[in-house]
Amino acid sequence: MKAGSFSGKAVIIVIALMMVGAGVFAHSLANADEENEVLWEPKLLFERDYDEVDELAYSPDGETIAVGGNVLELFSVEDREIFFSDEDAELQDQLETSGMDYSPDGSMLALVGGGNDGIIDAEDQTWIQSLAGSQTHVVFAPNGERLATARWDQATIRIWEADNGGEFEEVAVHEDEARYVNDIAFSPDGQYLAAGFYDGKVLLFDMENQELVYTHEFEESGGTNPLSFSPDGTLAVKAPDIVNKIYFFNLANGNLEMDRELTTHTGIVESMDYSPDGNYFAYGASDAVVIFDTDDWSEPLYGLPHDNRVRDLSFCPDSEKLAVADDDDNFYLYQVVPDLHTERLAGLGRFATAVEISKESFEDEAEAVVLATGLDFPDALAGVPLAYAKGGPLLLTRSDELPDETRDEIDRLLIEGDTVYVLGGDAAVSEKVAGELDAKGYGVERLAGEGRFDTAVKIAEEVADNPATVFLTTGLEFPDAVAASGPAAMKGAPILLTRPDKL
Image 1 (cartoon, rainbow, N blue to C red):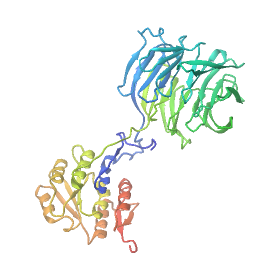
Image 2 (image 1 turned 180 degrees about the vertical axis):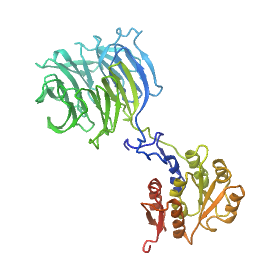
Image 3 (image 1 turned 90 degrees about the vertical axis):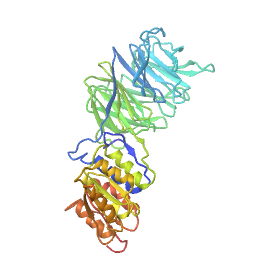
Image 4 (image 1 turned 135 degrees about the vertical axis):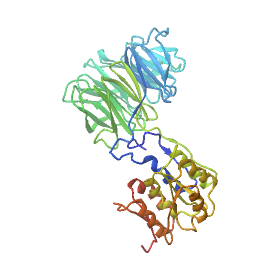
């Protein structure tokens, strides 16, 4: 499921014992889009001010974000707090960073950029080994067996491999005449390493043979950075200089083939990242974070304004959260995709389940209650749009006796004079049940016809006087009507029932 028009609450997947319960959430969505308002938008989960923030890295399990700059701090995503800072620690002095990456298994964190380049143990933050050369970029290969580093001012790319002792040894060096390496990135399968240079080039290295296999040179001069690979191997490259373009390349037999381009709102794009599930793409610019749905590049899914240049951003492994660092030395954590979870709403039987769903939808009171027999489906299904229109739940009853839990829920939601809409004739909901509600001071309005088809018509007349849409479904089985009930309610459209071969 992808982001889009969601309510501000978490999405609740209802698993009910009685399928007609799907309709009682109708009121909770009522009026959500009357003025074309956005039903869900990213929300800020955490914000922290630093002296300097240059780089962010998520741990593979999504539990930790490493925040690098003039110091290294580790942030707990669950607790929303910093649990480690080397500001006062003697860990190779302070670890200034311009590049960071976790190993795929999460056991190591590589840091470069502050003169203390090396790898630390991600669990206890102890030093494992140094990486010679004063590097400015670092990235682990997907299998964790290789490590690539680059030095910006010397156009040097170094490849390191893990030896039998677990540390990494330098096995290859590439020096380019361009002098400036802007970014490096491994392909998802680890076969290739892409590198962007300041002279408008993107180089592709084959890691099997540790050799340069392809060079793409843009017409414009300037840095080709940042770079980002999608999970399926598409390489995104920011166009050189201040051109308002991001280009996307397919890897084909060691070549980079141009696939498409994306026009950005500004030429200054400092960072970008694909979500691990491949559903989203984000870039950070001089004034905003912009997020796209990768199934629809026609316009951004979201835009998050920032007063300062966005230095770095990184999606969480669950693809739902985004960490952002900006030029004002702030670190932000956003929820950019609705936080989906499941919650079972169930009682001891269908009557109690309908009550539990009602309690979830209506905290204090309702404008009305729609009451239908719980022993057959047609009236209840036709009543879903009515419950939505009247601003109340759909509750269930036995034909000749009002269940205690249903009675208590009606009393909780309504006051004297409020309306209970009783669906169906005496055989469905007896006069005894209707009389009990009337005796409590509720206004009882029965909507009934000669059979289920006519009752659906009576309900439809109460839903809307002149509806633009009507949903028509068989009245002999329930699945189609269940599926139609939610959309019908949202459209303010009644549900009418028919025989399969005769209207």
